Image (tube, chains in turn green, purple, red, yellow):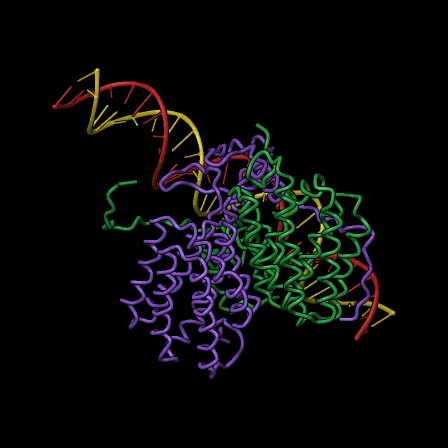
Length: 252
Length: 252
DNA sequence: GTGGCAAAATTGTCCGACAGTCCGATTATC
DNA sequence: GATAATCGGACTGTCGGACAATTTTGCCAC
């Protein structure tokens, strides 16, 4: 705590290995749009020649970009091409990170309170018919599958995803996505232990979907707020929670 | 657009290459906490032996996990160890994704409106003295560097980061982080063209910092709202914007 | 232009090698 | 006895070459 803070005279020079440097160079080309989405990447041997390194090195660099979702290949194709990172892919990384950081339910809930109502509000204003439909379908699916916990939880997640997608705001959408994967385990426990949860969720989804359907922004927002608030009450009711972490306990 | 949507009967089996399979296996071990944070990974040759593949293959798998931030090495060390993905690292991936998706300023702004005020509110309630200090420092830095656009913008970003960090909510923090990298370019343009921007930013930061200092949640939230709203006005004033995309135009 | 086919190119994986460096143990020094 | 210098082993980063499987391409016939 009380250690002396002295401005270091020299910054630690971190020598990036070649594969990382190469990855960075290519990445910059992509974000600078010098390589455009859909463009095929030169062959590995070609890249190796251009960068003056071995093919193995190139491959390691490429792996890096591939996992970032900046490179990918269309099914059945061999050549890599520049790809736009899909929200789903990116968000899964975020939620994995959050899970490893042992976020509490309260943290998740607060974030949901911040994002979901706003998303619902904009969704009411901007949803397309198609978006409305997937949203309604998710609601219907929940109603149909109430009995099957796994399915029901998946439907809830889909509902939130649909709302976010309908918001017509990519930033909100991608901000919301990671919350879903965190919500699932918590919701699963809750929905099993709190009897009235299912009914309340169904009712709320109905109201929200209606509001979005009839383009009532304020209502959509308000109902979504109530909906999320309910989650917190449900979680408190569940109350026999062993720990604070959302994360399902790993084995010793 | 109007293409038929039929639920496929069979999912296309994509034969994951070995390096991907291996990456998945190790990743699952990590999220299941069977490999715990800080644990050193076996040597590449050892892993190659265990998985029964060549070291090159192992290396490609490892690259994948390394870029996800699940593996890393402490400076100057050679062996990889299991790491917790840092918010910054993860968020940079998200904002790169968003940048490639050509988010508009409005989208960014709406997301900021959703997240930042809430973060400020919780920050007022929960900030530690240290967090308050870094926050105040960022504000001071802005004041000091108003003349230098680059520095000033960096200070603004730092301010937001500090607020989010002080919120004591990891989910909010990690949700907020990507917004910063998107904000920077937009803010840079704005701050240069709208004369009164700097003064207003400074005033707002002062108010927000004060509210957080004296633990006034509502004030913190309200002032942050005003602050963000100002950005939108600034952006409208700037108005000679060539396109909607935040992204600085890439060359042909 | 279309279809079909063989050749060339490309990817995934393997093997072996070597310099540079980090780590741990051993030995030398105060 | 504690600390500092030294040495060998273990690893990583990178390289070169190789090969099967599969995709892409060029070409020819229709």
